[in-house]
Length: 157
Image 1 (cartoon, helix red, strand yellow):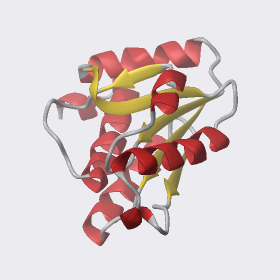
Image 2 (cartoon, helix red, strand yellow):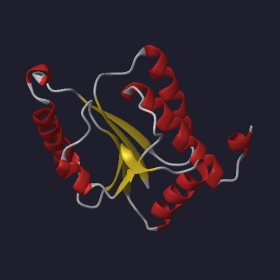
Image 3 (tube, helix red, strand yellow):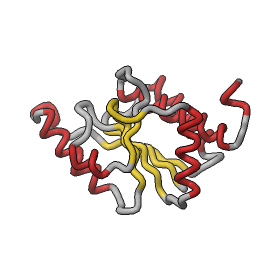
């Protein structure tokens, strides 16, 4: 199974980029992993929030393949513990999922079409975080889940 992290927005700030790279490298010991930053639309400032979500949604849906397992990160999603995330990832691997995609939407969220396409909607927290920080949190939590799956010490260090 390959893990994909997709995020709508700008490239990472240097302090975020370093952390994301470190955890991404660690994840590769368990699963192949890839980041895709979906650039903001050039005329984003001229569009309403609804129009922006629709256009970003069209781009996201054009990237997806029919067998991709899409996990949408959204504040309305279901929260999981670190152990729950480990079980979730292991279940996808057991189902022979080829590609699991963790999607961080744009500033206004994602379109209804993307929400409907999502196989699972996950909330990291009831708190709201900057998108770039979510990238770091996501990478760390997936790495933590991998160590839990393998019963390694990171989770309790």
